[in-house]
Image 1: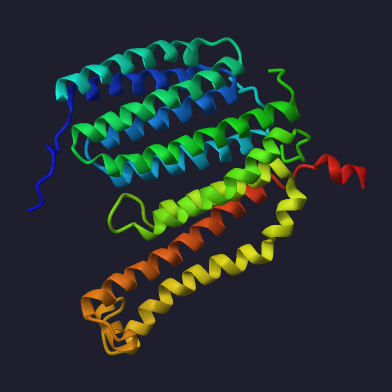
Image 2: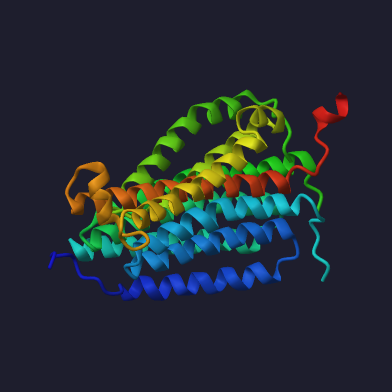
Length: 89
Length: 89
Length: 152
């Protein structure tokens, strides 16, 4: 068996990052401007990538960073440019 | 060595928490865009510190490089949108 | 949103960065068995490089390099490589995607043939993912009338 470093959660990081994710999620729902909501979702996605990384799931963290924080945000900005920027509620 | 790196990680998390205030409450979209870019640079270092704590830093360098590149592209896309469609909300 | 930018800084930046991003994406595909990455992630990074080109240089210049016909051919050939390797293993008297039977064709040991078979499949997946992601972005942003079309 290959000798590695310990592969369990780092508890202080876990609690702090979950708090950040909660703050970002609540902010993304209550903001009226759609472009700002897309950017807050980009930050949310990168905090999720950090949570996956400190749980030891490195491939999942790579996919989350490249798809959701990278190309996903760009696609959503392109979709907003076709409709209005003001949300209806 | 582990306690030293963990304390540096906690310090960077406190800094990210201060920038998160501008992401959530920043009046307008420009504040949020700049704050998002600043969060990206801090969390890159947190990712590398997690890699050191797991004794396998060469895996986590790849994820950091990907996010550094995609952060730039996201900021460029959002500012291109604001240039062509105006910044009126 | 996709108009030709007049800013020389952004255009020069994009021109310098795009080859390096593509080489990095190729590294991620090739080293999928050892470090995090693989076919899917490398394909997404390749698509991001071409989207960068499209944001800074406008629609027409990107269409000269990556037209819709090229995108259709790339996505189909990615799926063809994936399914084709499976069918070749089937023809050589094995199960579907049983890479050890490729050792007869490539004159290497069966363990080495398994490694090469997975590498071939990752390349197929990367090509297909890149083509589809770029095509989605292209179709979303194409409906607007860009300024250069209005002048002509």
